[in-house]
Image 1 (cartoon, helix red, strand yellow):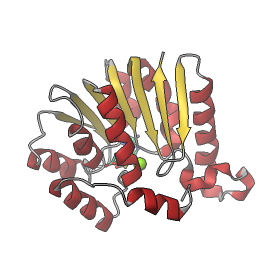
Image 2 (cartoon, rainbow, N blue to C red; image 1 turned 60 degrees about the vertical axis):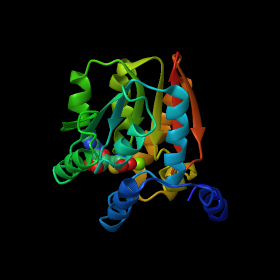
Image 3 (spheres, rainbow, N blue to C red; image 1 turned 30 degrees about the vertical axis):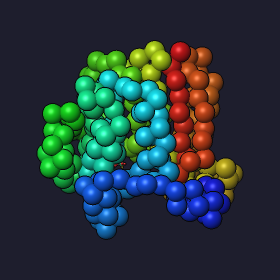
Length: 213
Ligand code: SAH
Ligand code: MG
């Protein structure tokens, strides 16, 4: 937990939630331990999408399709969403969910490692949602930056490592040290990039919102 748990619960208590389909999907994700965006992040995405009204979204990390489907409800009808997933067990589940929701035309799932797929993509995208393996964000960034349109938004989830990011690297378990170093590097790079304006928000599990100049 990054912010005070009572404050997080208080803020979440005002949330009006989602429709039946997404609610069911969220429940299923919880049961099957599929990590999906939290209510605070859902709420921030809804806000950003409503302001931005993107036409081409790229998502890195589909899981079972929850966030892609959520995003599809807050964009113009003409907006297309491309989402990348490499985990074979989750790909068919995501596809089936897109079909069941009647969104199979609006959402395209690209199967494979984002590092390879990003290189092949052409773009530009006016909204990119990064929600894959935290330790890889810094490696995805050059391609993601190339694919992002000027004025486009890059939103990255889980950037504060459950709050662990503020601890000294020596206080972090060896297992998490690589992610710790790479995520600090990612935040530094986003904040110091001459063509990006970035804010680091203590929302959910930590979020950055960047705009390309
Ligand atoms: N955005 C989803 C949750 C994504 S969880 C939602 O909120 O509904 C992160 C997903 O990223 C996992 O399913 C994982 O398999 C995938 N992932 C991690 N590294 C990846 C990579 N290099 N290429 C493609 N997918 C990746
Ligand atoms: Mg996430």
